[in-house]
Length: 174
Image 1 (cartoon, rainbow, N blue to C red):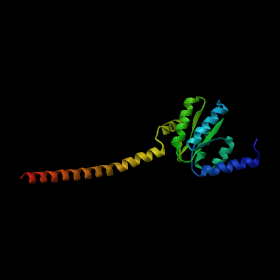
Image 2 (image 1 turned 90 degrees about the horizontal axis):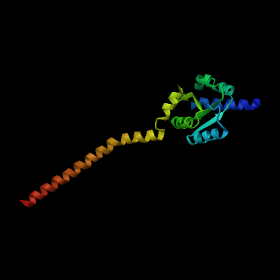
Image 3 (image 1 turned 30 degrees about the vertical axis):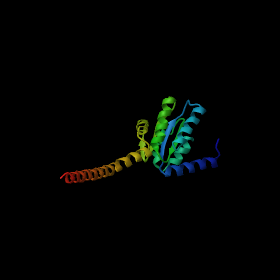
């Protein structure tokens, strides 16, 4: 059992985290073994997210006056909270894969970049490419016209050289 000071510390910590507007996913972990939870934590850590089990009442107190307060009704029963500050699609991919591996794990919902999402939206989010993949796709799209333009210029230069060579050959023959 936590002391009052420890509870205040937990509330202060999560209040600060929630005010920073991270992406948050709530899951029900009932029936999972400690080993399975540790595996899930490890996978989420690789995705730059953190999974914690915190008393629901403390989370509700910490969520007051933040966007997370909108999903306070999901904070009931055995709930674990995953906080992701960078790439929410990477964390969503971990959860969707884990639900397939461990059917007892249930995604309740969450807040992703200020929007309330349910389990279906988190599943849809997991199908999106990660942020680095999207950036590389965007750079590819942006560099494509430049590459095509340079190719066209090179092609025109080559054609001009062939034309000059042909004129030179006709003058030699005459």
